[in-house]
Length: 142
Image 1 (cartoon, rainbow, N blue to C red):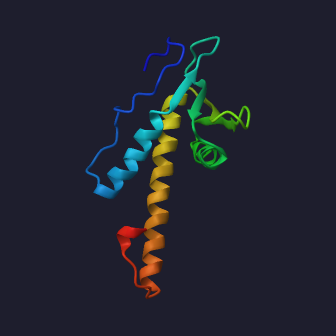
Image 2 (cartoon, helix red, strand yellow):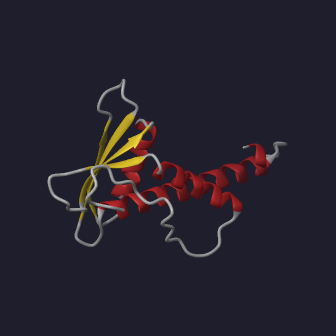
């Protein structure tokens, strides 16, 4: 990532996770990669990467509030908030401010990974409860 450019993109190829993933988890990881392609950084007056505003293109309150909640669970994040600048614009501004132990880009990446993991957990619990209830269904259709 080039912090000096006007709209630096987060590198979607930077995969720091370890271990092997199942195909379902890889699919969820692809969701994280896909959203990283839609994120820009608004340049600030200084290049302090602990205080960053990200622009998420084609996203709304659904992702904004959920991601804000997950990022705020990180003990190294001091503040995370979002806004939709105008209803006619398909973008979401996400502000992240962190302590000295991490930077805002890492906090956002961790938040996206944690949110993807949470989604996988909810999906697996949902499927387990459907199976336990005796419903006839194709697990791949959900």
